Image (cartoon, rainbow, N blue to C red; front, side, top):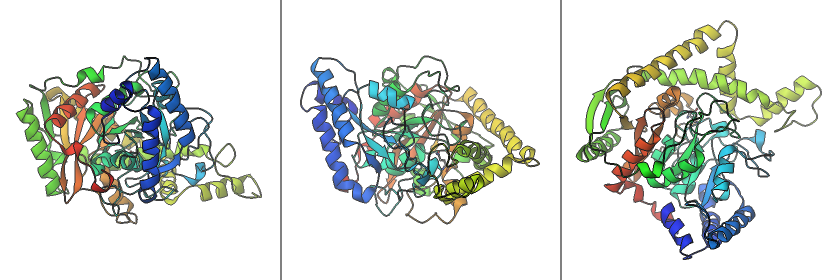
Length: 484
Ligand code: GLN
């Protein structure tokens, strides 16, 4: 059952080949068997899952429910879940029981989905390897000596190993696409504002966006459909009808114009990754798309721009963790300042502290203009690059990452190398564009990801292109042997 598509699971439930309770128990058993090694789950909500499954079974018995009713999923541990710990990979929130549900949790509950639990992530979603988590690193199911990518490492490891059919995730600079690429999954980060951020622990509010990791574009489309839409509780959420993503799949891609940015194929790109991406582009050409070389000249500025903007916003967002309102509080503070200092000093890990320091610095008097304001201007130039490209082409195509999954510990002492993991993914966040990663090859048994970036609100087209490719390729159907 764990290798079935969501449509096949829905069919099995509707035709009573199995119940949602049986399906849920199957995944709970797999979690017990395999998660000791992988460490993808931080919290398993077995009792709640079985209660949700029973409710779904009752609905199905009455002939009610939709395409997701009774299907289990895992939530990245930064989406608030009423009554369930939401720790965000941090000691700071280790004792935090969310008093309400995030908007997307509400929506997916209402769609009849069953929450198996909360999955691991880099602390406050800062990282590209899931090694900064307070709960220890998550391992890549394709090779457990390697990282699954991050920050949504728990989401991808759980799905890639069949410990959940699908999972929610978030992407601030690449955290859906990079881990999806390193684990052979399909991940989509929608347009900024497409999905509500209400109840999602904030990292960098102008960049954060919720999305999905799944085994195929078809699965991702189903779940995104249920998550997207307007919510007045997130002031940046856009009031605009949601396209019918399932209906968009299966459209002909003849005449589709694909742009290949020279900046995404330059120095640093592993030749095997390049070969796989080139081959996938050629495959799309066979399906009737045209390939055009394009320029995104400000691409080299995206990582430095991001590492001013994101820490600045993080330093502001994380000021709420003060040991007073919620989260970790130090023992026996002698006065208020001591309370702040020790609570934050003990609650946050090194990477989070590094970001808070950088962010506070770039926002401080005398440096604000030189760094933060400057970064905002460059951010506009990066967005303008894409606006010009989209006058010429419909979709931008390139690699998701420069290489395949790296070894645990390999980059932990070198933050800048770690930051460069997102060299191809960050620009889409700075420009607020939808983007996805789909598997397009392997090197030495490790998955390679292809990235597609679209115009604002063009998720339907991205999913369709991905789906078209998945009709003529098998990379998305491969499973790591130990978890097949
Ligand atoms: N790796 C990037 C960072 O560390 C992006 C993380 C993300 O998208 N949440 O900030």
